[in-house]
Figure 1 (cartoon, rainbow, N blue to C red):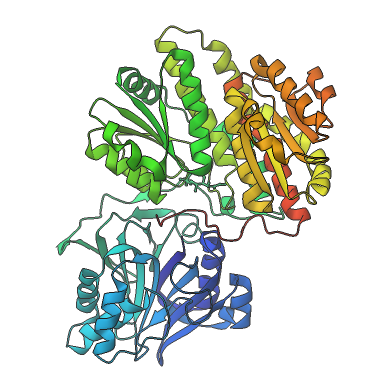
Figure 2: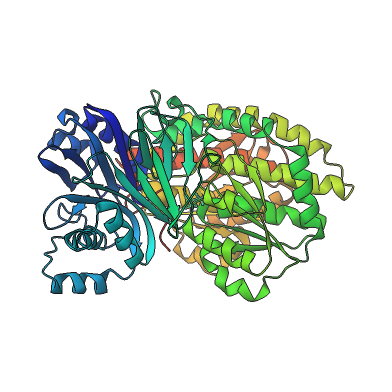
Length: 601
Ligand code: F6R
């Protein structure tokens, strides 16, 4: 969480505006406060405050500030309240050093006491500020800024992506990475560092993802990277990113989330066109030869993984689903003959990275399913399958869920092909999926908007389904709670009688997902039970199916097979959550307390 950016150019420009634009792109990573630090001939100029980027930047006139080197930060608070003092950048006593940081410096309390004893005066409650004072302390003892930066780094423990400017070396941005993501953007006449790829695209599509333990500095014309005191050769590490800057803009939509819902047909078409049959076949063989299979992920990615885990039962493969942050409970199982499918849009979610590392330490082979080329997960896995959803900026995952489901369905089909199943219908369905999703949007956007006007008055909702419909119900409920703040819970419909039904009274919304036709009759019994309690029953149903007549509100979706349906039947639920959030005056792109990429455990 938190987004950081740093740039150094060969000539002066309105760098404040450039930093403001970078922060707008990074804002999905945290929006409690924002700030910039710019090196000027008079020293370092810091402007920062609590609030969203647009408010802070207009309050302090970011766009008018000129300079050639600066850093910027958007914050998701961990240590210290979101107020002006705790906003980044943080500086030392003399104001010559400014630091932006994403992560947590675990030993900051002991460092802080040590520095206070040496006379340093701290302004904030943050862990980050210790870094500025540490550097200052080492500079006071005669070290150059670069030496002081390295010495300070050797003292801190924890997760960090850091960018630092020092007015004694006005054309440098020092950086370091451990666990929190950081990439270098390689330019002509400038270089930059940033937390993610979309932020870089305005300037360059040549990037070097940094690895844990790497640190260095950029100047407008050079990049220096070291690891453990040894220079790292980065000449063959430059990656060309196939995303355009426009893809990371809102393009006329009110919110990124709505844009990304509408982009799903395209994102699916790219993912399907980009499937690599040889790679899929290698991975399918790995799965079939494994002693145990795990499917691991967090949040939406976990739910996409569940569609695969449940689908594998068809081939008598009992895969174990693991929520990334829970991996340690399963650690005793991990063994050399096992294979894990790790699903993560960003490829940077710390819980998933930790799970994967623990698995690999015990010899488990890991297959990454990710959307970000050269992400940590991609680099640290034995095989990688890429979704090709393009950049996803809205905090709520949408197109990344549907593309994960599609990619995993293709992998599922490949497993089936090897075991001699007839997978042709599924492959035909996969080809139709982008069009089906387009239709799902077209058919349901108006009714989602209308129903949102009713749901906005509800404090809670249930999402019920069975079998392969469950991941869709879980994902639908997650969308509703995370962006509309309506308490939404998903249950297997049969399980609802074992407790949850006690909450149901007149007009309580219950949303049924009918994506698995084999379970329709049983699910209809659960509809009847809810109607007997006067619940407001809503259904996502196959287009043209008479099941719709049994429900008060209906979203119709063209029907494929139950696995692929997960990608299409979720669409009305994405729209419903989106329009409910809008009806309640929430900002769906920046839900409170959340950040897109969770880089703290
Ligand atoms: C929900 C959402 C999160 C992410 C989760 C995992 O809309 O976006 O639940 O799915 O944080 O993120 P990745 O897929 O990047 O590992």
